[in-house]
Amino acid sequence: RRDGSSRFGPGNQFAFFGAGGAAWLFSKESFLKDVHWLSFGKLRTSYGTTGSDQIGDYKFLDTYSVSGVLYNGQTGLQPTGLYNENFAWETNRKFEAALETGFLQDRIFFTAAWYRNRSSNQLVGIPMASTTGFQSLLSNLDAEVENSGLEFTLRTVNLSQGPLQWISNLNISFSRNKLLSFPGLAGSTYSQRYRINEPLNIVLLYDYKGIDPNTGLYQFSDLNNDGKITAAGDKQVIYNLNPEYFGGFQNQLIYKGLKLDFLFQFVKQKNYNYPIGAAGQMYNQPEKLQASWQAPGDTSPYQIFTAGNNAAAVTAGSRFSESTAAISDASYIRLKNISLSYDLPLNGLKTKCRLFTQGQNLLTFTKYKDGDPEFISAGFLPPLKVITIGIQLTF
Image (cartoon, rainbow, N blue to C red; front, side, top):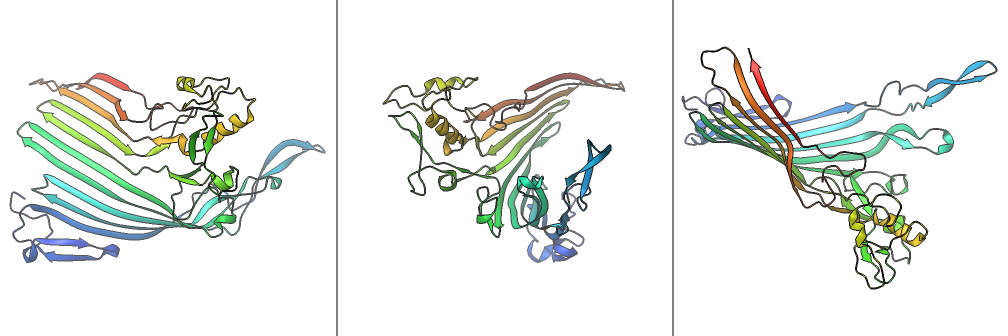
């Protein structure tokens, strides 16, 4: 610090904090005596185990409700939930290690953190046969899932001279998800949903090869070489829909009573294209489908039109929406928020007056072609552009 004091702890010591309250102190004079550019340092780590029982109320009982149906003049009851006496707590084991450092009187402050969380004894609904009258039975799944990642933050005071200040904040996260184990996965109802050592948010897809120029139909790879295209044998290409990384870049500039704030959000990811269905169906479809296949020899991006009577085209169109062609790069950079305000200099008055304007989702930079890259499902609006102008009076 400028006043000569230290942020390393009493007696000019550098502190290392460990799990369980343990701490290691090293004298600054021993190895940091002449390091004037380092103004703050902390190494921390933690480990713990938590349980989760987020399963709703009364799951430890067989439950019933009034049916509303009379039998022999009496109102009957119907079962609404099955009790499983063998389910128990879901277990989460959490570990984290991080380094926090400040440089040049904390004008530059950097944090790096690594975490790993492992969840086991998953509380899920196990699918049941429809003849039981229930869709699922709450139980513990003998599987283990790992969530890990790196998180970085950087804060810099770029300018601080009198009434002029400029401060920037950057954060970026790399998160990974993985199914570590699942005994009996191949023979379970989840066999076409999950894969060991892959994220939970994967999708299994057909491998799209293009359009047959002679028939005008979408073509897909026969991965198991059995001479036919089936979901069990050929819908096996793995795509990870979790973001590779995401973060934000925020800036704040102040000059006397004028203040400007803005935040850019960025995400590196893949996502589904907007669903198009089978070309030629009798409902509204994107204009781009006008470029569909018309005659033998065409090299169109979309297959032959059909109103539904061409079974081969309908089947191919359905597979197309579940193939690698249905997913594209949906990375984007978005001006998430921007705000400009000015405090009027009302000298001698107790009243304060601030003029401000704010904007949300004003700009988006992306290669994604089908609307907004963040929300692609039908029935959901993309983030709205909002502009607000106002006056704030404080008496």
